Amino acid sequence: MTHHHTKSITKDGQLLIKKMEADQVESVWDRHQAQQPQCGFCELGLSCRICVMGPCRVDPFGEGPQQGVCGADGDIIVARNLCRMIAAGAASHSDHGRDLVEVLESAAENKAPGYEIKDGEKLHKVASEYGISTEGRKPAEIAADLAGAMKEDFGSGKKEIALAARAPQKRQELWRRLNIMPRGIDRETSEAMHRTHMGVDNDWQSLLLHGLRNALSDGWGGSMIATDVSDILFGTPMPAPTKVNAGVLKDDQVNVVVHGHNPVVSEMVLAACQDPEIIKLAESRGAKGINLCGVCCTGNELLMRHGIPMAGNHLMTELIIATGAVEMMIVDYQCIMPSLGKVASCYHTKMISTSDKARFPGMEHMEFHPDNAREKAYEVVKNAVENFGNRGEVYIPVEPMDAVGGFSVEAVLGALGGTPDPLLDAIKAGKIRGAAGIVGCNNPKIKHDYGHVTLTKRLIENDILVVDTGCAAVANAKAGFKISDSISYAGPGLKEVCGSLGIPPVLHFGSCVDNVRILVLASALANALGTDISDLPLAGAAPEWYSEKAVAIGAYTVASGIYTVLGPMPPVAGSMNVVELLTKGLNDVVGAAFSVEPDPENAAVLIRKHIENQRRGLGLDAADL
Ligand code: SF4
Ligand code: MSK
Picture 1: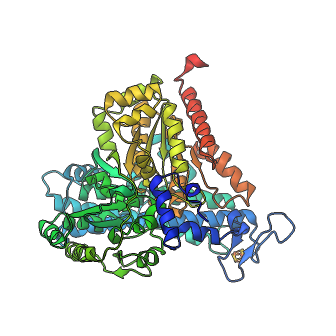
Picture 2 (picture 1 turned 90 degrees about the vertical axis):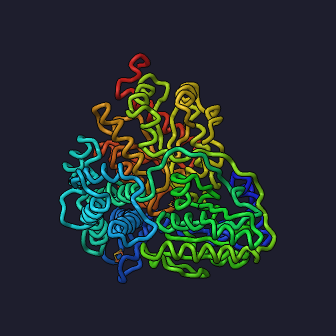
Picture 3 (picture 1 turned 180 degrees about the horizontal axis):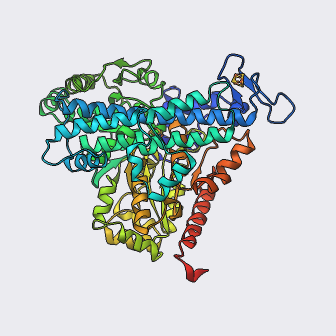
């Protein structure tokens, strides 16, 4: 049955779903359908398979068992499961951060050919935050010390991780008071796994508080390190034009697509794709050149720093292969569906996995390490070129959309003249009511991109500035919200401010780890007002999230004081105690809480109400009272 129009709001999505159906290749939507009905106990978070006295489940209707074999009730089981989701998400971002620290270390030791310090200023700034002296020292020396200091943040020797000091004083004090100040990045994840083992922490509240601490170790630790070290090594993003959607693939060029999250491999692939000799090789094989594109967050990393075009977000990754135009997809890790090898086998696309910790069926494994990455990148791109001749029919159904990416905090402050004051003035004057971060994935449970695009549209037309990351950022770029003309979608105040600054009303802040850029900007705003983040007219939303990483992001966002609306329901509804705490009780603990609202029209209303309340709290609209 063809329901392509109900699965995605995007033209390229719809047409390529149709193509996959015609090609009789199974997609994520087909597999989602085949899973129906999905397990109700698991959806509610009421199933447990933590130990082998189980698996257990608690009956939500109160008729069957109310405890697992060990005696854990619904509250404990739900809280433990949620904690483990946070731990997995925090571990993923933070392990990615660690990989970058290792590259920084190798680069400092001159053992990573091709990698260098691209942003010396940022190196100095971050090093001084770690208390490392920079005066008269060579970048390599500073980088070596910084890598060492960052590694300590991962361990157990500290009382507080270094970058938590970027949060406003009041927030830091609150974390200390609640005993949720993260001490070490790996430590908090490891402790989360310990606490959730059978017979350890069986107080659902204390479990959830630790979940917040674990999430904070990601947001102000692992992810923040990932973003900062990426900026140091590859350059801090600055606004630059790019193009997005499946139309960025070229029918007359060798198309190489990078997928995953870590920019370490893709930066070297980019260098190889730009090498005149390889381009010549491509021409000798009948191609007009080599076209490097991204999907998901590795794509976002390249888009932010180099304006590399973006072929699509999470639910587009299979569809991009179905164009028949991709010579090679090179993957690192996270969000790479294990189905991709099988999909690629139906076309001529070669799939290459590059990380020793991420292997996939139907992919060729070519391991990249800092010392061999440049060499390997040349090798794989040459292989991609050689695959051009194997192309069959190509179907690139749309023209690309223009977009601007590259809004780091440095770039935003630069556009504002060096201080957040003009932005604050616009907020105080009510021209901009507030700001919302729209982040996260796609999920086949929600019409592809509908949640992101609808929510964003509603917010900007109501004068709320939107910053976005991850797959949400790609959805909004495809929808045309990131060109200068897009100010026509904005309300009058936002239109005026964006028009005078020459920026779109929706700012691309980067990949998933780059959500920390939102935290840093929020801190700057709070500090400029002499207040805490939880007082600001800000909100977060993840309208189509699917991943454990998104749970960690949501948890650190709320623990940092930002109200957050989730589209899909997390598996917590089996415990009304947990639901109450997450959606209400946390307001009294960390000054922010979650809402769950699958309909983005309603989510927009919730966010607008929240932002207006926050404004009143700050006394910004006293006249309206
Ligand atoms: Fe069952 Fe308790 Fe074991 Fe979970 S930890 S599987 S609830 S016995
Ligand atoms: S890639 S974590 S699907 S945003 Fe970061 Fe997209 Fe979500 Fe992966």
